[in-house]
Length: 330
Image (cartoon, rainbow, N blue to C red; front, side, top):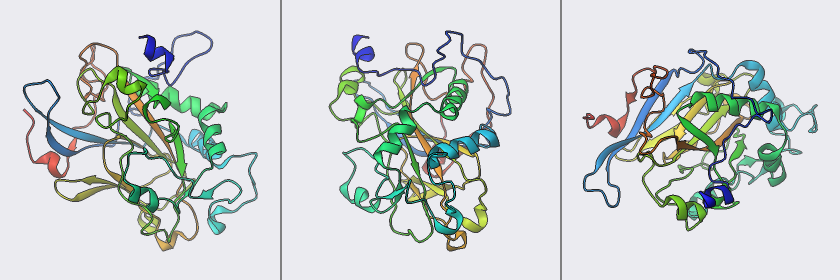
């Protein structure tokens, strides 16, 4: 407990400075995903355990979690408004060079393959000072969405990825703005994996373990698409999720305000917009999160809260993709 407090390993993502209880939104539709995909199925073994278990990673897509007003305000945070150049036309000219820099998207752990880091070096990202402002600045829109995330997962303590996991090379929030013509820049990568954490205060406290292990913090990321408009069929720019056993990929297309929750150990990649998108960027904001258990030996696979007493929200049956469909869970 001392180390958890000392290194900020379990700080809730939302805190009400008034001391009141966290307001709960009971809008069932808002918190119900349009799809839940299970991918990358494999027999997994935990050190010290006698038996292995069947494990899959999750991709959960929400279209009503963020209303248009909040999406617009989050886009303003990413663009740096009102301090940035408000007259810049990014539809005609691409990302504002007063806000975005080439090579700014550096959000993978140091232990990732160097080749992948080189392939992302030319992508548009935010400079360090802009990332620091998004992470630490006083932005009502950020806090409002983090309250939504807290309400989405009442069975967990939701926290940002602490610096004590990977160091300051991986920020808990980041943004990207891919544009047409960036083919070959992006490659598959993972955001993190508790089985591969480096020596750190986090690893000293929690050890190394497969993601989704019972009673252990679960590493997830939240991807939020922010454009005012996006023609997903004409302009493309899907996010692709890789299933290694079948060498197949599942695609999620951008829509304004669409939110995607994924396990951090899923291989995924940006795809740049099609040439029909012109120079307009496809904006997104990403949270790297930790879902901490609230009870001992808690089932960390239960994202919907269906195992709560009383039961939580009822989500659609998950779609089993690729290798996840190869074995029927017992």
